[in-house]
Image 1: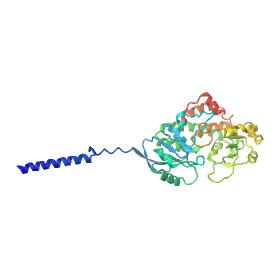
Image 2: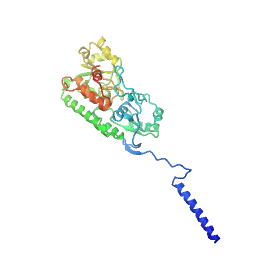
Image 3: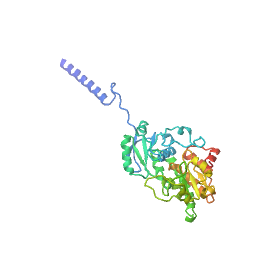
Length: 365
């Protein structure tokens, strides 16, 4: 009888110990907290064919260059954590919602923004970093190097971020990654409307009737982007002839030219990107002999929040497609309603509703 009681006690003890062990294995011991759930992720293939595991959904993004950071702002403004260049102002006003004007300027890695800092990017803890191909060097090697420096933050390779005649792949890909397919489709509709409106008209202009254009960049107007450069792409796209047609070193964005060279070219029309230079050109005796100045065909590029013509190249240039075409050929595009297109573009792309005075300021600086 005593032996039977002893066996019952031992069996009960074993059962208690096993039960405690079972609870511990299932993670609900009073002394050991439950393991937190892991972050949701998804696998994507970037535009260079690299498979990447990224957080899902994406909440915060940085980019290494202006074209991609501007694209993020256009597609999903609340997901952009910082910019590479500060937005431009006109008469002290920036034509974008104030909360986005206050985004920190984190710099980047281009000729325009050679001041990026990997530690600063990492400290902001973005879900991903978009890295754009610029046509300089080996982009695959660049991605490997950037990924190594950014560590566990996925670096997503983007192509076509500055190619005016082929923005579709960039818009579609970045829209999909950011979960903004609807916004991407709206942007593409506007983009294709501008493309078809301009290209179908300018392609019929004979070569000998095309306006000869000089792109005057910088505070003295004596820097320019050459024919074939991504920075002057709109000239040829809108049916003009870039007078700066000579070779420079591969990858160079701009070249310095002399006043004698500009005088020899004697362009019909001048596009200016610097407001200070624009204010002086009609009073500068060095420029007064040039046909474009004599005939009052000098045009300042609309500036805010990002330039329509260049600086930087990117989706901000889409409104520059109709603007440039109408500047070149006002008679051929007399039916183009630039105030209406400007309002539509700023609403869809910059999330900002322009006033009548702001439209006038943009179009008539």
